[in-house]
Length: 451
Image (tube, rainbow, N blue to C red; front, side):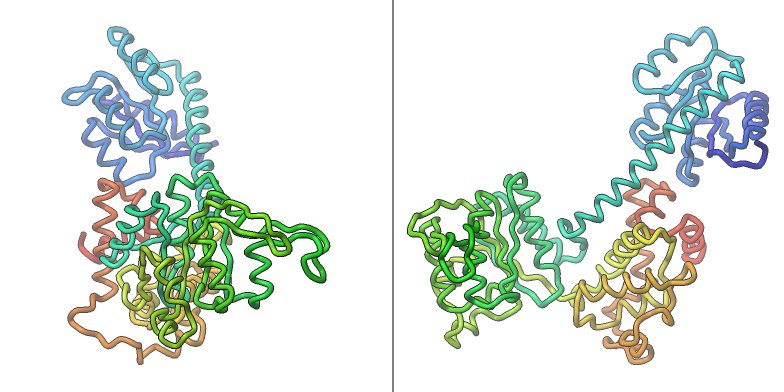
């Protein structure tokens, strides 16, 4: 099996000859080998390379194998650890196995048995990696239940959400189309004590008033022409969960009056029935309109307005949170690379353009652009020529003029890499995964930035 790289093994032993012998044996089996003669050297290697299995001596000068195992258990809990030990420290090795070590051998090991144990350890490691990939794919399906941002505006929103998520008070989310209003509504629900109960979303702008009324309240058989059977309405369906009325400013005045009565009395009546049904839902609404202006124009009830905006959350447009663009881009690209089974990265020129473009469609437009280029990309790097026409036309006449108060993409990229390095405690493999780029690309950026 020479030449077939089966996995990356880190060997740790203060005896150089022992390292050389075991390295030669395992390389012949097709393993990629890294060597360290101390725990400090081993930790440096782990920070730079994607290690699959660790084989370590137990007794070493300075920090020993048990201290190294404690470090691995905290920082790299998914990496299997195999101990090599002398007869005098068998008890320590057995203790390590009870704490989660994969196996231990007494020196000199039975190399045939060691190969078999190593193969099983690698299989376990690869299985855990596959599980993480599957979890990532499942997380994509819940993408609308999380939102990304590190700007002060977004951190303020996250603080508000954390403060009110378990409240029964109504929440009104305001902002332009595509800013993530429904994502915030879902976070309010799925991070609250109501998470096990229904989340029901209704687009108030998608249907005329009469149809929307029957959708919200439900109806009895024969309530109107075409009502051939009883139907449960969305208020009733929400039960004690959350109902999200998207674009509530589109409600017609008669329906606004009925909604106000529901909020006041906490009960509804199906169309064609006079039986009152108790409801305990929490109301979360959104609008892209200025409802105070709508009130002044007679298009929205003032009393309903005060009922629905006990708590108000204002979603900023993407052009007002430009420092979040690299994070959002990385997240969307990672999502679509998994879906399309591709490995892609964004060129610096594209990111510079993304940062300066006005994004009239906000986050939704950015996500659509990333999806389009991910699907159509031929190479591994997405360049300006791969972008849709409305963005390519902005080359040379970007929407925002460079100012000293606006950081360049290089500055943003450097800040994100430094932040990720700190968060991952210097583990470059984890940094590359977090940023959605290959390790090779990360090392190239670090060399360019002299980091």
